[in-house]
Amino acid sequence: MLSLKDIKKDYVVGDSTVSALKGVSIDFRENEFVSILGPSGCGKTTLLNIIGGLDRYTSGDLNINGKSTKDFKDCDWDSYRNHSIGFVFQSYNLIPHQTVLSNVELALTLSGVSKSERRERAVKALEQVGLGDQLHKKPNQMSGGQMQRVAIARALVNEPDILLADEPTGALDTETSVQIMELLKSISKDKLIIMVTHNPELAMKYSSRIIKLLDGKVIDDSDPLDKNVVEPIKKPEKEPTKADKKAAKKERKKLKTSMSFLTALSLSRNNLMTKKARTLLTSFAGSIGIIGIALILSISNGVQLYIDQVQSDTLSSYPLQITKTTASIGEIMNTMAKNHEDSANHDKDKVYSQNAMGEMINTLMEETKVNNLEKFKKYLDDNSDLKDLTSDVQYTYATTLNVFTESDSGVMQVNPSTLLEDMGYMSSTQMEAMSMSGSMGGMGTDVWSEMIDNE
Ligand code: ADP
Ligand code: MG
Image (cartoon, rainbow, N blue to C red; front, top):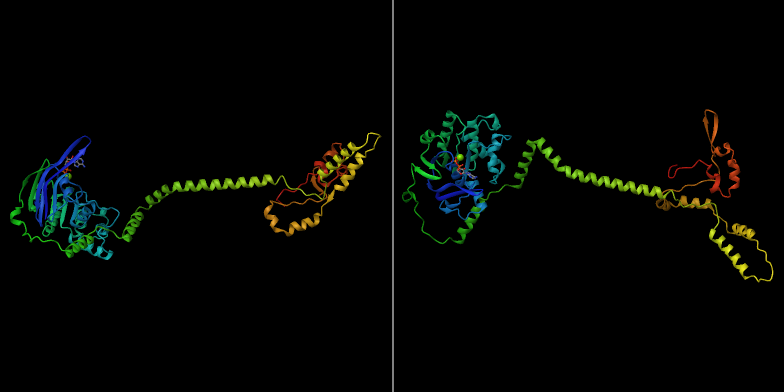
């Protein structure tokens, strides 16, 4: 069923090439217990990896059930590994944070088997290796021999045709080794077992065939397969019909290595949950970049808002002022210019009088307009639209606000300020009288003023 034909394997390391296998040809029976013996470095592991599809041969051919693997694609190898081969390693390779049962079940998840069937088959495999009562232990709570049994159960749960074992007893004491060998021997009744070992006594006692390797070549085979005798009678060749081809395709599909989406999700969730601290740290580390971007965005947004605020505050210190009385400077200038023009048209026969000052005062009186501020304020108060367009509307009144404060030297007037008066200048009331309009009032002695946008 499995045959190697002149398999060679070269490893290229730097400039040099290491020939790990130098033409190995072996035919295996369907059920036998083969031990591979040989000194360290002779290519035993390499041979096992090639048989198991973990590694590719450089030249030669590996035939599985009479089919060459020369044209195998990756998915063919995946399917072969997953459905025909079970692996047992010296170092067990169990997942430490999962129970024995989940370790064995895990081997089935890739085969697309339903959850209940997975459990059933895992329990059965563990019972077969004598661990039916230890399903929920973790690997680190078990002895080496027990762990190797779990590994064997895991290898068997997929019901492979071939079991490959690389020094399965290498880390075990003699007594436990014997138990493992007994187990393998019982399994070999209906499976092909190929085992690499360092222990010739155990190999002699338990296996049915011993192959010795040296320097990448077979030097001895205790029970070679005589092809002429065992070769099954070939069926008469006939063209495969359409139905045959369809069936073959279906078979291949069935054997396809796959995992359902839900299984993959729950597996990854389990993995994350078993290492909470690490998951948390990793996700935090991963999110630092995102946090940084969010931080920069929020800072720049805040700065922009601040700039806008400052801008509107600054602009509001240049307000649009509407006073009760106003005179258009333009009109006054016009009148004065007209006077000048008039004088240019006079004949030069006599002296004309020109009442420049009087004209100016007249114009001032004529052009001065009085705003109806009472009505305007009502208009502003009623028009809520205007509030959206302005930062603030502020009113000042002709009445001076008298503010007093209590100090050590008694009650003191704060507004209107008496400072200038105290220094010997005019009183603020005199100044008030002098100034023509309320807006000029006080000439700075009116120290009371309301802050904008702050009632
Ligand atoms: P063993 O019989 O001890 O299991 P191996 O099959 O592991 O021997 O190795 C056989 C030879 O191939 C050794 O000389 C080893 O150095 C070499 N070898 C094995 N694996 C590699 C690799 N991945 N790269 C390079 N050389 C390798
Ligand atoms: Mg090895």
